[in-house]
Length: 287
Image (cartoon, rainbow, N blue to C red; front, side, top):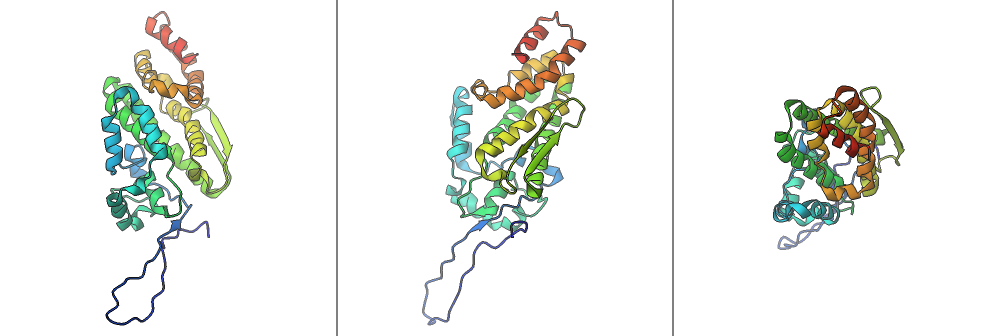
């Protein structure tokens, strides 16, 4: 049944054979479990929530590309990459499969990406590319490069926004387990809402649909995290952070505009708009 976890990877039959017979029977391993178990509360807000960088191919790809081409490379890699090709990592995860597919797993190798792999063994489904690219890469990139440049208030926002991003993702996944409708409203009045229809159990299975869902949660997370209350100096650093290539994606502009609807009025009310940074940021956010 679709609403029950299935931990069986394969079955086989045996028969009596001569004692000298050395050929072992082969059992095809296959599992296509669409039930998404909830993540452990302790992992929410951490970059490995999306992906644990266990695969050498991922690490080599990220480390070897130049800064200017990193984003396009990682995005293309996440879309075309087959994580099962790394036999050593696949074997490591399969040995811990029971722990990795358990609800609220605290296994050290758990991630949304690894959990998907262990629920979809040999059935042709690939984890959403968002987990590796917009999820893990962007999360770890923010943490490494943006966090030290922010004020204490900006750093608190970054931690909070990261938590809301993942909490919103969990809400959407759990709503898709319950039915076809995903509805989300900001935790703070005036920060927006969205709804979308996705066939029950199918959210993770279509890459574009999952990306569209995730992008819809971004403005809610940024604003609920307190984006509108930050100084113009923090806002300038934050708005400069998305890789320039990402601004070619209409979804990036959509989330920027949604965030600006709240940020700009607040900035005008609480900032000195004669300040050149404030004026420049206002023009950027209202484009």
